[in-house]
Image (cartoon, rainbow, N blue to C red):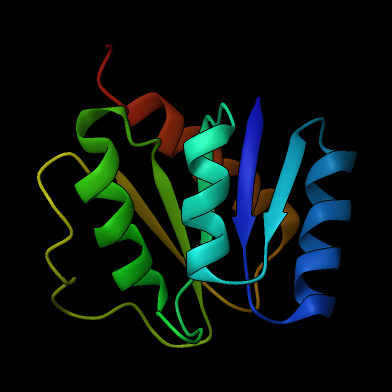
Length: 124
């Protein structure tokens, strides 16, 4: 399975890349929303792992833009954040399958969320 991991903190991006590769995933990384949008246009991605607090776009805005371009073809998204999950998640579009994981987390929790997001994606 190929993942797109997006985080604007280089050390976190490297740690996620290493952790997920150890768990058998092929990982593609981006350090910003605009770069993630560009990669998604050219790479076959199964699940997106997206940090919430980033610049210039936060994770929610990045996913909104991805959904606008890719519609139902958008891979499922696992949001990562140091903040508690919002009581009401922002509207990201009808085709967005999403999971949410609060930092810090165990690698096994991230793998579980990735697999759950993948299972929840409707068949195309």
